[in-house]
Amino acid sequence: MSFKQLKFGTLLTVLVILVAIYFRKYDNELQDRLIKVLQGLQRLENKHEISVRPKVAIGYGACTDVFIDAKYLLNYSPSIGDPSHFDEINNEEELLKSFAYYFRHGAAAERYMTNGTLFDELVAKATSFPSSYSSIGGNAPVMAMRFAKEGCDVILAAKMTRSLNIVMPDSVKIVGGEIDKDDIHLIFEYKRGEQWGPYTSPRANRYILHNDINNPIISSLEIFDEALPKFKPDMFVVSGIQMMDNFQFEKGVRQERLKKIKQQMINQLPTTKIHFEMASFAEKELLVELQHMIIPFADSLGMNEQEIANLYNSMYYGNVSLVADSTPRVATILDYMRVLFKLVRTRASTIENSRLLTRIHVHTLAFQAILTVKNSQWKNSMGAAAKASLVAHRHVCGTNTIDVGKATLIMDESFSTSKMAGKRILINAENPVSCWDEVLKNDNADLTVEVCVAPVLVCTEASQTAGGGDNISSAGLVLQI
Ligand SMILES: *[C@@H]1O[C@H](CO)[C@@H](O)[C@H](O)[C@H]1NC(C)=O
Ligand SMILES: *[C@@H]1O[C@H](CO)[C@@H](O)[C@H](O)[C@H]1NC(C)=O
Ligand SMILES: CC(=O)N[C@H]1CO[C@H](CO)[C@@H](O)[C@@H]1O
Image (cartoon, rainbow, N blue to C red; front, side, top):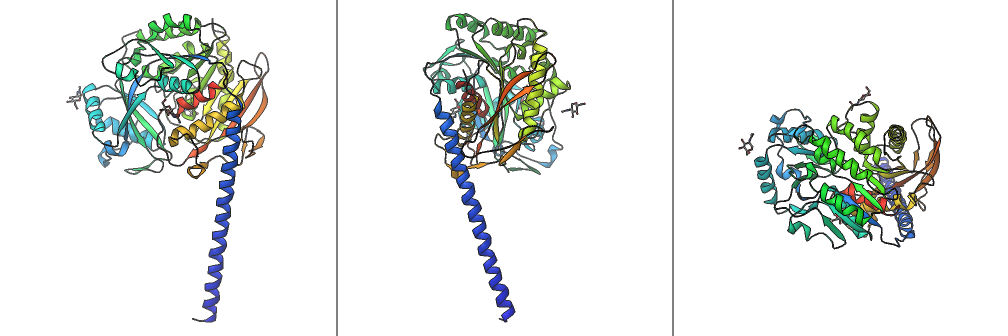
C-alpha cells in the first residue's frame, strides 16, 4: 500500500466517522425535539380537566368495520388499465381501477358497491384471512365512544344488532332500535410506501367499500327526534351523511331525509352547540345540498385535508375535488379555512333559522388547525389542538402511551400563516401549539378569530387509519364544549 493510498484511506475513515457523528447528533437533536414536543402537548392536554359531564348527542348510523390488508384481497394485474374514478362500484374491475385511483395519492375514499352478492363474497373472502379483524364502525359510534371515553354522557342515533350493541360502553345510550343484520364496511388498509403494481402510496390510508341498507336512509332519525328534547344535549354532532353519497334513492327521498335532519338541527336549543363532521363526498349534487341544508345550521365543522379541498372547490368553483395533496402545507390549509369560513357565514346570513359558523377544525397527517371566533362559546382552542394532535398519534399507533421512538415530525420548525403575505411562525418545541389572533375582513363587519396550529407526532408504525378523523375531531371538541 502506497503512502498516498494510506492517506486516502485514513481520510475516508475520518470522513465516515464525521458523517456518523453528524447523523448521531442529528438523531439526538430530533429525539430531543420529539420529547419536548410530546411533553409540551401533554402538559396542554392535562391542563384542562373536564369537570361536569357534558351531554353529547350524536347522529347517525353504525356498522361493522371489517379490516383487511388491501394487498391480500385486491390483486393487481396490468389488465386493469388506467386508474379511474367511479361514483359507485358495479364489479371487481371497477373496484380495482377505483382503488388504484386513490391508492396512488394516498387519499382516503368510501364507495358504494351496487352488487350485494359480490359485496358479501368479498366480505367472506376478507374474513377468511386470519389477519383480518372487525370492530364497531361508522363515524357516529366512533365519535360516541371517544366522547364517552373522555367523560361525556352520550346518546347515539343508530339501529344495530344486539351483538353490536353490547360492545358499546354503558355510557353510550343507543337510540334507534334493533335490527337483524348490521351494515358492513369493508376497509382495505395500506401502509406508506406500499407497492401495488406500478403505484406507490405516499402515505398510509384506507379505501372503504360498503353496501349499506340502513345508513343511507338515516333510519334512526325519527326515534332520535323523540329522545333529543328530554336529553337536552350540550352538543349535537351530525355525521354519517356521506352514506347518502351515490346511493340510489327513489326520487325526492334524499332531499326529504336531509330536510328532516335540517329540522332536527333547527329544533335544538340555542345553548346546544352543533357540530357537523364532513367526510368523503363524491357526488356534486349532495355537496351542494349540504351547503344549503346542513352546513348553515352548524356552529362548527370538522374535516381532513381532502375534505376541506373538496368543500372549498365545491363552494368556490362549484366542482368536486376527489383527491388533494395528502400532506399539504399549513399556509394552504389556513387559506382554505379563511375563505370557507367567510363563504359559509355569508351564505348562512341569508338563510332562515341558520346559525353563524364559529369554529373549523382541520386535521391533517402533519398538523391540527383550529379556527374559532374570538370570545365565542368555544373555549380552550390551544388545549383542544394539543389533544387532537396526541389522539391522532395514539389512534394510528394503536397505543395510549406515546413512544417517541415510533414518532416523527413532518412539519418543519417554522411555518407560514398564509400563501399571500403570511407571517412566519417558529414552532417552540417546549410550547408546541402556536395560537394567534387575526382579523378577517368581510363585507359587512370585520371579525376577530383565534387560530391554533399543533404539530402531530406522526406515528411511524401505523396500525390503524380508519376512524382516525372521528377520534381526532371528538378529542378536539371535548375540551371546547
Ligand atoms: C353480482 O355478483 C354476482 C357474484 O359475483 C354475479 O354472479 C352476478 O352476476 C352479479 N350481478 C350483476 C347484476 O352483475
Ligand atoms: C375547479 O375549477 C377551478 C376553476 O375553474 C379550477 O382551477 C380547479 O382546478 C377545478 N378543480 C377541480 C378539482 O376540477
Ligand atoms: C387511540 C384511541 O383511543 N383510538 C380509538 C379510536 O376510536 C376507536 C373506536 O371508538 C377505538 O377503538 C380506539 O381505541
